[in-house]
Image (cartoon, rainbow, N blue to C red; front, side):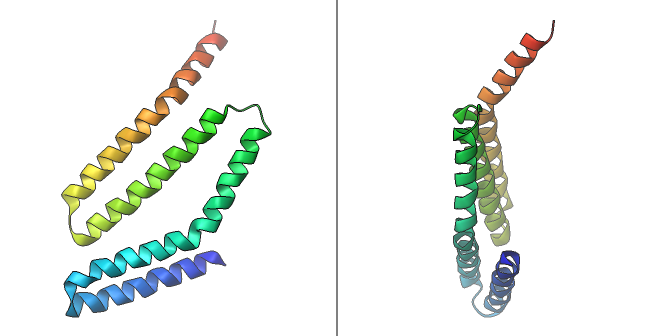
Length: 128
């Protein structure tokens, strides 16, 4: 099971980080970054399969390709924002974490505008 391997990488990173915080606190963030990168790299195959599934679904259906593309962008922004925020919080920089979180939310809202407007147009056509 893939989740067991991901949790294992996480716990190993946690142990290394705890040890480093005792002896060389400034190196602990590097352990967190490397552990996070390993988890992301391990997850790339799954991400690729999700993207290919959504692309195939988009090509074989009547859905607008723009919506699938927006969905992927919004999901990517959300995941990367959460990753960056958690790293900032690990280092103790909550102020920067809050600003990154705010910026990610603004980007998600801006990308959602076409979906919202199309949905509202469709609803107004359906309602008398």
